[in-house]
Length: 276
Length: 308
Image (cartoon, rainbow over the protein chains, first blue to last red):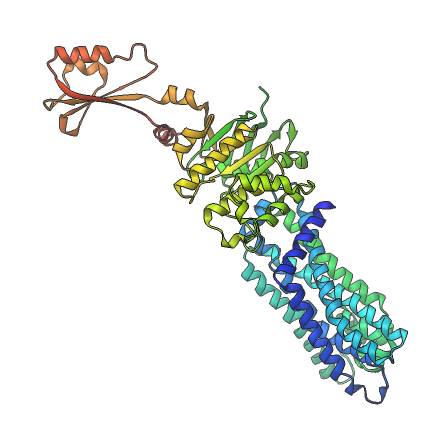
């Protein structure tokens, strides 16, 4: 356990030193404040509180930004160390390969956590000043932070997998970008296309559509946040496409957890088998 | 004397089918400097990598101070420090942090006083807060040695430690290596500078095509294989060597003005007195003579060129 903590500590120090934490937190803070200040206008007659609207806006923002930050943190984590030769030296120490992976994962997750809490915390502070937020909205905000970190964990794990299957960091970066485009952008576009082309009567069946929607971690994240709060449901329409409250919060969380564990285990197995 | 590293019937076949090591047996004695020599691709780095735990052996085993390197990997790796061939350091990290990080990975409590001592020994103390990327190649090499020493190892592997290092720094590094040996650290080094092995090592191993073809005490090796040559500068050039002198295996060189006699220093007699007597009888006069000893480099070349 101590080894995992030493490696995690090193990753955190590295991220602090190369301004990753500061840059990520500032970016998220700037965008969340912008959304909090300008994003309340579309609430219209829904009479949702400022925090509820901010939660919905931040959920949409997170879908794009958190995976990107996570992939940028992780794509280099293994391939970069192999390429620089530092992994070779690291593995001569009394550490096991899974400890290296878990240590890096914990460190990067801490970096993401701090960046998300600091970044989104600014918007929450602004909403708190407005003073018309209920417990439900604050709970929604807490869920947003937690699920954003979980979404980040998904893409950290995917980034490690990309970093393990290739030997060059440039290739790993290419795979990471590809993953982001497919899971964050293209997947939803394809589903939207299916939805529009069916004009209301889904050829693949509503249940299959829901499964497809949930199968994508970013959509699972969206469903979790938009179905998890009454205020958020008021100002969003997307949950209806995913079956709304029927999906609940447990299922999207479970899907995201599977998306964390599966790439991590796969990376660990590949790492164990890799001949140096 | 019980060996600190015992390698037994060690073989390694890579996934590509390349056999890097062929049934190696080797014992390293505690407190010695052991030089492992071999041409590129001979298997030196593979052998070191297996002992250090980064490559798995196909067959055979290794023990370090009696502990199996697979079963007791924590114990064995904690006893070993490796200075790799490549300059593998985190470029943006400071010298102090990278050395301290290495110590932490061995599960050792922080010991700033010890790290300070190591950095001062390696003349890195003034650079402790500098980023590694700002250091010269030689300094980076020292940082790697400091990392390898951070956990107070009993065994230090130096894989081509002076490659690309200038002469002055190289000599300073060897001073450090000697002082480490004097403090009880066992040192295993590979180097392309064979004169360094000749100068530094207590024992020498020669590996070629994955086979350990020789392990010998350095002085014994020089004694056994270090034949000498006597070169006579003749007054008048010779066309051929007289038949009377054929038993000495003489060679004519430099257009017939040099006569070379190769002899075994351990031979009793060496044959020099008899040769000089016979030269006088044959009327062959010489104006000068000198002797040269075969260097370790020549011994090494003759060993690795020998057909398998």
